[in-house]
Amino acid sequence: MYEEFFGLRENPFLLTPDPAYLYLSQQHQEAIDHITYGVTQRKGFVMITGDVGVGKTTLCRFILQRLEPTVETALIFDPVLTEEELLHMICQEFSIAIPSKTKTKREYLEILYGFLLEKYQAGKNTVLIIDEAQKLSHHLLEELRLLSNLETDKEKLLQIVLLGQEELNAMIRMYSLRQINQRITVRYHLKHLSRYEVPLYIQHRLTIAGLPPGEDFFTPAAYRLVYKYTGGNPRLINALCDRAFLIAYTFDRREISRRIVKEAAGDLGEAYLNPFIWGRHRKMRLLRRMMERV
Image 1 (cartoon, helix red, strand yellow):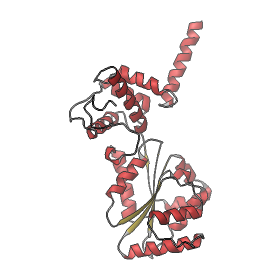
Image 2 (tube, helix red, strand yellow):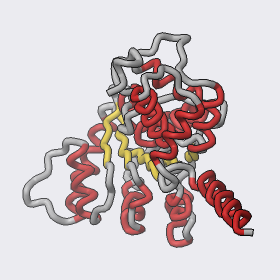
Image 3 (cartoon, helix red, strand yellow):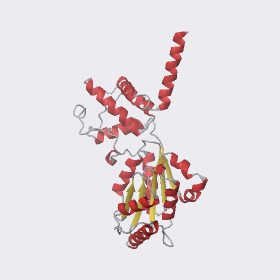
Image 4 (cartoon, one colour):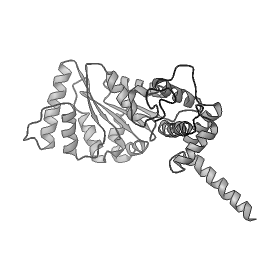
């Protein structure tokens, strides 16, 4: 809606995980390096965790586009499945022909093992990526551990990359899951962007959307307020900036000021943005009301 007004080809702040818009902060690059190392060195398990909205799914799609042709991948987005459904979906994602009579877990494992061994002998690496891995049941995590046992005398046949929210860390540390926890030797935790990275992140997305290098719509105070309201969470930054651009467009202004960011934050509301900031604002409002009554 506002793209043409600001001279952009497309909306730079959509919430969809478009890998073209991935901002490679130092920690995002480190996460990619961890995944690349775990896959190429056949470490069996890699685990990447982070808060909601830090860019795990976008990172996943970015990596899928850049893996070597010798890497076969299977991607599962929502692993709320039974054990048989998980194995069936893995086979489907690897484009493995499944006989119609296949029903038991043992039959699926035999088919999958034959496929993995065939790819290994052909000099290929196979990678299973599971997004939203915090939704995995304990039974499915144990099933994945058993899948990681498919190996030759020297190397793992299947590399498993788990992408999940912070709860995944707590799950993995449970005593009942200690066997899989001990096998995850490559792991990384994605944090929010720093106050210095937020302007770079916003400028990166605007540049990808068509903004000429060197141009900027935000005032320094506006950048600071974006960080204050979002805590550096990329998804929240996108939502807040999208609303700020819409407000600026409505008022025929090409500058995103502190006032516009504040109005955009008010539109989104305290339930959406940084709870800590809004919680502090709520306390201040209550304090003012109490003082007014005195």
